[in-house]
Length: 176
Image 1 (cartoon, rainbow, N blue to C red):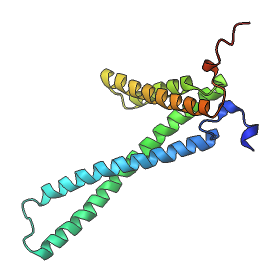
Image 2 (image 1 turned 90 degrees about the horizontal axis):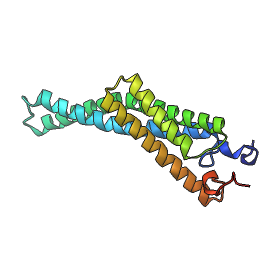
Image 3 (image 1 turned 180 degrees about the vertical axis):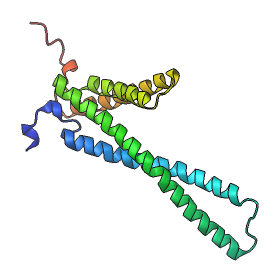
Image 4 (image 1 turned 60 degrees about the vertical axis):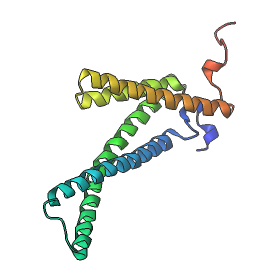
């Protein structure tokens, strides 16, 4: 199926819904793994230091094995923390992209409004899943809505620069 035979409201960043959702999930998963690995490595490094601070090595050979063992522990800690973060971030990206695509199909438009609503709902769903307190829920919804508004706005700017139709920039289309 060529891009020209697909309705324009289904394309975002010139990607079909399947391509967009897949790309978003992969990028989100990689980002989640990187941030989780960093946090896990840092925590494992501090834990190893705390557990072995009472018996620090004295010779060059002991220092070698100390750091070798520490590197194994840090790598394992990074992977153990990175994988769950990757799965959570990939699932969040799937939720957001899926909602955005659903609203594109419902409204037959792909604009910042759908992105904003998808971000807002993603924040609300995540805060409901984790049972966040009221202030954290408000914060999660604001972050989700802000990210949705930003990504939707950027996509609209790209579409405008490519010469595509942006309904809210066409003037008053209801006047005769």
